[in-house]
Image (spheres, rainbow, N blue to C red):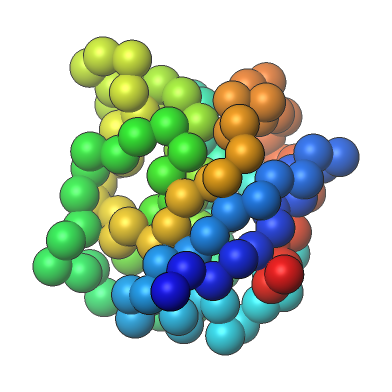
Length: 124
């Protein structure tokens, strides 16, 4: 059963769900999390206090609205459009991410979010 969360980026709040994977559960158990977001194309990522190994279903192929955990940087990733690694209109992670959930609302409202934007993830 998915765990509902809110993700606030600057003054934009989005509803999202974390899935039932071990990585997503570890993240949910550490909420709330606040961080300064880095941008990489149309992706926001930031280090979180969760250390998880690469999952068997880790992938670079993600969709707009997907949430991922990047084991290389212990980072939470929000994908909302093309990234520098994209080969088409879909986002693509720099290296494999663990799928951890999905934004329920229209995540494309994050286009243009500045580097260093404050991000907060909270349980609902």
